[in-house]
Length: 88
Image 1 (cartoon, helix red, strand yellow):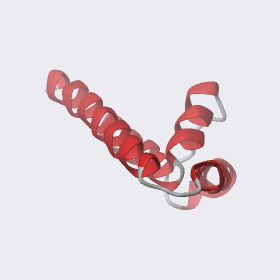
Image 2 (tube, one colour; image 1 turned 135 degrees about the vertical axis):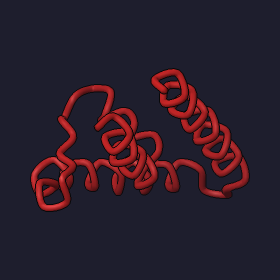
Image 3 (cartoon, helix red, strand yellow; image 1 turned 180 degrees about the horizontal axis):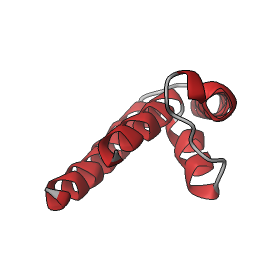
């Protein structure tokens, strides 16, 4: 069962990166779109860190989580919630 969790986790990462590249390539204002996505993702991470106890998800503010939410935005925060749900 652990193999499937790991496999599914890496498949989510690969799919997310492909969708992210596709999304940013087709945008006219790439920098502004990236900064807006990174800002909302980091805001979501901080809100989850401080108030996530209400929903049972309190991710730490480590470099990996910051990069995940900084690159993926809100879907990155959702990925962290899904990751914690799969681990438990």
